[in-house]
Image (cartoon, rainbow, N blue to C red; front, top):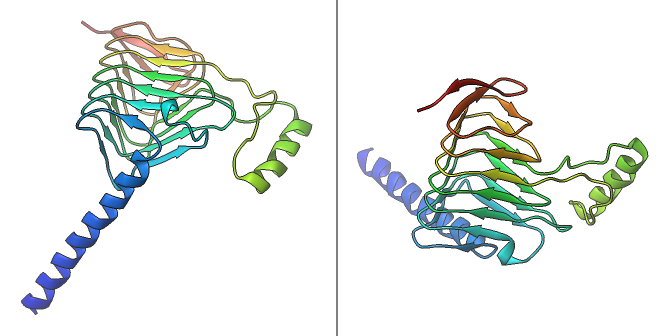
Length: 201
């Protein structure tokens, strides 16, 4: 019994390594990245623009979540020592900039576009094109706005960061918050919509 257990254990380990190797390889084909940056087996990169220069990651970062750059535009730029947690999604139709030493926990959503048109007729047309192509082909009347996350920011689990937002250096976004406006440096924000609840030293 012990022998069978150990054989299964070793085979599972080998399969994990093979799976991680191919995940790492497929992710790295669509991005430019620095020394020591890792993509775990939960990582997913969808660079629909097919331009590697539209996703740039610095040194010693760890990507466990999903990065998406749309065909009609967008780019994601990250500094050094950035962590993107499991289940987190970064979608870009314009620009998402993340500084150095940024911690993004699990199940965080960062999106610089409203994704769909406001007019319901335009939404219907978009939806039908999504059925054919799987993603938006052109921007049409979709509204986008840049997101900037400065150095040493911590975004806790389940938070959402929406378009046209800058989060200042050293700030913390509390769990499950929805950030719709700029956050000053060295502040703790919480709630929906997120508001400053504390100044940090």
